[in-house]
Length: 323
Ligand SMILES: NC(=O)c1cc2c(N)ncc(C(N)=O)c2s1
Image: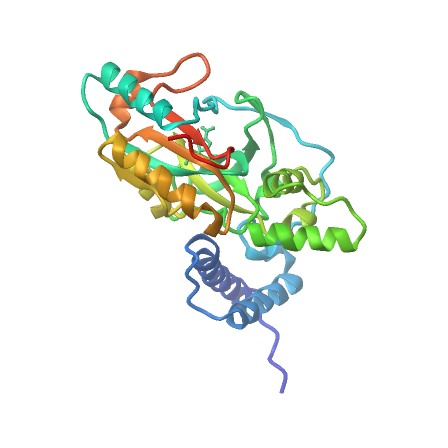
């Protein structure tokens, strides 16, 4: 005999249980890249939730996984003012530039300092605001002060949690990017459809996030790595390396290739290592970001008009690293 339809009370309880389970599986798959169930298990639970929401539309919540597929046609993107400026980085292009940076830092800090080294993801810089753990606003960098509100589009990016693991209010920054394979697949589709192809994954990611039809964005398989805490809220990290771990603990996706380097020689070894490895990565990088690890020293060094004195980016734009 066909299952008896659920009462509203049963449907409410079951929908809550399914949302929790599906969001957990989604976190494992999209944020941790370590799924513990097969796709068909996820799909079966998803269909069960979709059926309940179809019968009881009032049970649809903002953090339901069914809301990730988009469905809004936006009229445009409102402007967003970044209360905390999204700064740019000074660029270095050679080993000499990196060693000169270290010399300046040591002189200003009055001692040798440790560095947190991270891959420079070739995507689009974004800022994410969470209030009491709920995702409330996503914005582009824009000119660093004025960006565009792309919240609805970022809600379709599966690795951006709609709710953090802790009910805290924070603002974090990172990169939204298109994985290399997704870029190849998208351009193949576009070529077969007689459409212009994207020049590179960065343009493809930027073009995708500019779509006014959120259903289109949902199909582009965009991803993220978060790497900066703008508003710490109750977060307690005192160093960049710990902040990255704390971002991961609250449910945000961070890049696993980070390294704590005690000397600039170790930093240079990391740069050479990833200059070699970059073609094997499933996403494009355009360099390495080197930051003074200790936040107290970062605060002491401060900023020039346009960029922090405590960080530098080395570009991989040219094929050979200038040693
Ligand atoms: N413009 C910037 O400040 C940054 C840009 C980027 C980028 N594209 N990828 C990674 C990082 C990072 N791990 O800090 C930064 S920082």
